[in-house]
Image (cartoon, rainbow, N blue to C red):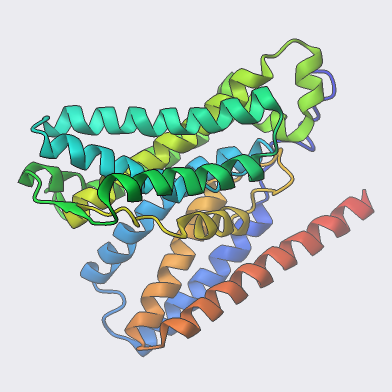
Length: 323
């Protein structure tokens, strides 16, 4: 047991938040299915899962970062730059597999750069990642001169549209990564130390835990998740866009917080992240089916996030006062 590490305060998921989100999701599903007979069709459900899977992959990486007491605003730019790097290698005649692997390694490296600067120079994660957000996006735009790269081998589309029966590969991948993330947080030293970084970093430092290593690897993990997302975007569009992933970071952070992971660090909810991704995916899809303007979609999604998080925080504070 790490001195100063209180499991009652660190690492506990908040089941109330998950139940609240499930309740909201059930009400929305019932309402939209009544209004639109197409909502519960398999094609539409697969469409929801397909779009949600991409957001979930990013959100899993962000869950680890936020629970460790950090923030990563550069993931959208890493999505774009990874796609550009893979696209350039494909155009140069490099095989799909090798290009993809190197692209993911580059994404991990970009995340590692963030982590090293944060951990070694003691600069706030917000400052470092907002700077790298602009830097990585700028590199993508300079390399491509602002133009998309396209005309790739048809095999690259397998990552997004491969034939796995009735389910696309990103859905399978996101489910696997969600299960893996739960295992990491609950049953590995790395997962527990990531949570402890957000809950009591000083306690870890006093017992000789290499703080810099764990902080850096958290951002490497986030970079890898962004790299996977960039690969799926390229595969889906069959093109590498320098503006891909624009504003994804804000949606991802909102999803993670909605799911119950504490912005203060020390607490993570993988289950909550999964449910929040599904909830927001259902809202976007349902409002589109009901022909509601995208302006109102943003309004409803924002309201759900604020109301759900507010209710959860109020309940948490009352519980703390009772204790």
